[in-house]
Length: 317
Image (tube, rainbow, N blue to C red; front, top):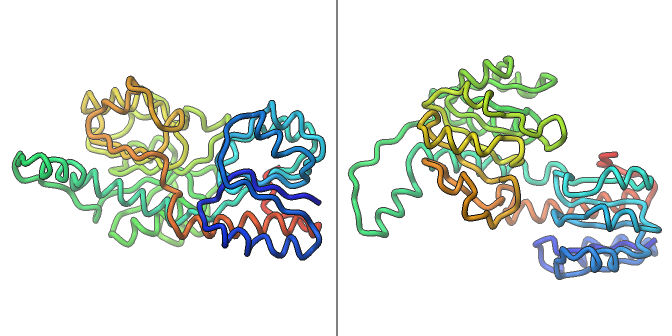
């Protein structure tokens, strides 16, 4: 079979070569493209006559998938797969795999970082010092003793809860199914509205799909305390970001730490959150650490190797 990695994975080329060696030893062909492309024509060219296509978070659109003539697996080196034309892949009986789990720690740590920035005004203090201004002592808050709501208690949500627990926070959460691992941490499951109403810090960890789009609507966000902060390191469209920006500007929410948006950065100049009060924004980097990139590559190549051996794993559908 032919395997093609269509884009870089943010690890050294030597790491790619090492991970690809077992594939070659089984007698399969491996091709690596070290330059990213978003051009559908180039993506199709790279995918022609390929049995296993490997990508990361680069869009893999319908116009490419519908023309694949040999591909049996689209192996996504990423947790989310909403950037892949999954419906078309299913129609063509092409399997889709993902690399869930590689960024649990990195995402959870950025959630904590954004929370600390909001609670201690770290970014604002840095700006003030650099400008040579001193607006007065910045009095912050502690995480200890606060109620943290976790929306979505999958692996990342549970890891985030563990870190908040280490700070001494009280844990509550919402998920379609209750997880023993979350309960073992002392997290109490509640109805969604109760979590929204009680949380001092709300952290979102839902996947992106038709059910979760606009999951936190204007109506839902309005149930939060004016003193609460919202952290989103999951997917942007889960939240009504226009409503979120308005609530921040009206001081009906105390702050927001946002790593994901309705589109990938750069954001348009009129994007509401760019002009919202007390919003700390990062450019979709929660997953992006040196350690996570190595782990991601390892999981992705392991998925490919398992598929080639007739023992597919991490198949989404």
